[in-house]
Length: 180
Image (cartoon, rainbow, N blue to C red; front, top):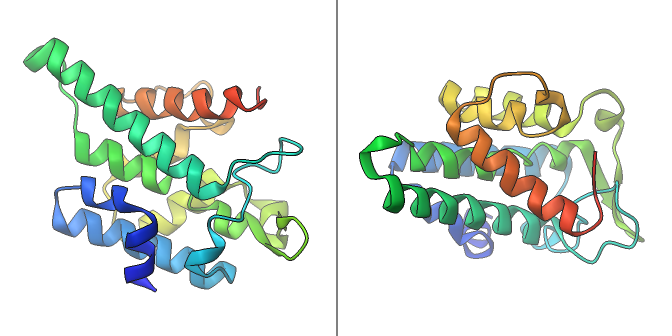
């Protein structure tokens, strides 16, 4: 399962710290096992149940947001150099785990690809993502990105990396009709 996941999400390789990368991958494997998902299901899950008739998959969204985050980081690092301290590994790791909790918030559904799971009645994905990451000893800086990326993080002071991911996520979400 791990090899297939790596083929579907090559962005894992953008995390240069081996331990961090392996722990992020382990979060995904944990979520898939707990949620009853196979790697090839990731392309058929809508990235949001809040947008009707959405033709963008969960996998598309996660990859786009990770790539947007990396591109924003690289542009800012190139432009500002040492004047703006950013941790690229933490940013990419946070981008990759922020929505992994959706694999618990949703459940497989033969008709729609996904439906709200019982778990999702009680916990939205930012909370589940943090729990999955915490269980794999991800750094607090990475958990913070997952915790504050969505509306649950409104009013909480975001780190620079969390600001970048929050905006990357909302660019993708709002371009396809989401909003709040």
